[in-house]
Amino acid sequence: VIPALEYIPSHHEKKALLSLFGRMMSESSFKLSQGMQNQICGKNILIADDFLTTGKTLLDAYHCLIQSGVASVTAVVFAAARVNKAND
Image 1 (tube, rainbow, N blue to C red):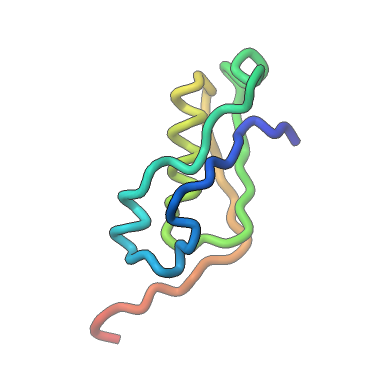
Image 2: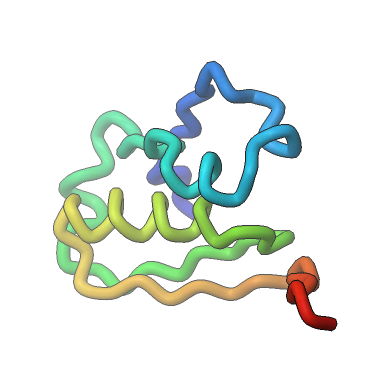
């Protein structure tokens, strides 16, 4: 386990109050930790997330890592929220 990403708190800390669109359009939640560029460049990275709601956390982490030069990013999620469709 390498702490390659740092969480960036936003002014929208109460994510539950944001709409799905609001969450997806919010700023990135991560930045690369200092000194990690050389350690992860060209590597295959696995991200583990405990709970998937919108996918925004994984998407932000993916973009941050790809922009940092990793070879690939794979994600594993342990649980996911059920999306209620309008016609269910």
